[in-house]
Length: 291
Image (cartoon, helix red, strand yellow):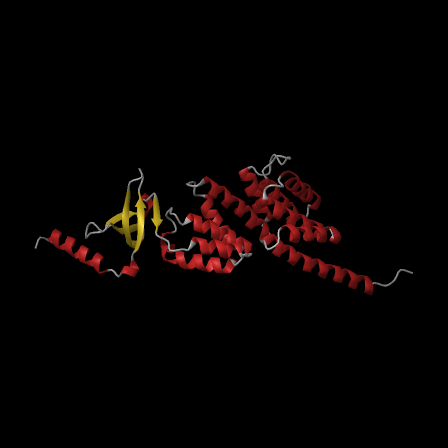
């Protein structure tokens, strides 16, 4: 048998012998939007083995030449949304991790997994895992296929840096994006809110309260930023020792935004304020009376 024919036949036999679980369906999109539907067989360094099913021999492509991979991800979007609404964040994270585990090896190639990673980015932040949120957000920030997701990732980049206490890096990022300029009444609420959080981190509470007040005063119909701004307002009052004012804002949050992430955080803040009050009273009780 001709040597080249033998190699061709053996390659086809090898591809056909790969267990079904070792391959997974995907649509491969190349520059110029030329696409193939089939299955990814394997990855060998910078090379991808892709089978269209029309030939016994898989296509071998450089990973860097692929414009996008569209995976057939098995996720129940409605169930995920329900768990997210119920604030079952850890369960959503676990479901996403399981569904995307087979594709980790291809995470350097642009794909339709970005929307799921964006959800992970948000959930990691909500559960306090700021390093993971930052890791995912930095990756999405470099992907300009979806400008809305890219902008969202930049927001979570800044939030994760601030909440992990990295004020210098956060300040540099805000300067890079131009978010530290034009903080007037009609500025974007996310810009005002993020800068306010940075001011709190830097213990510049008066500046923070001024920015938070702008979010609340001029964005009352925007729940995405109105709710966290009111929570931040309560946090600033607490930092200033204005516990009565903080508790009044917490009461309003519980009344208006019941069963939300902000309500959960507000209740934790309420407990902290009660502890601070108790410590304050204890300190007064053990101080010697002025003669």
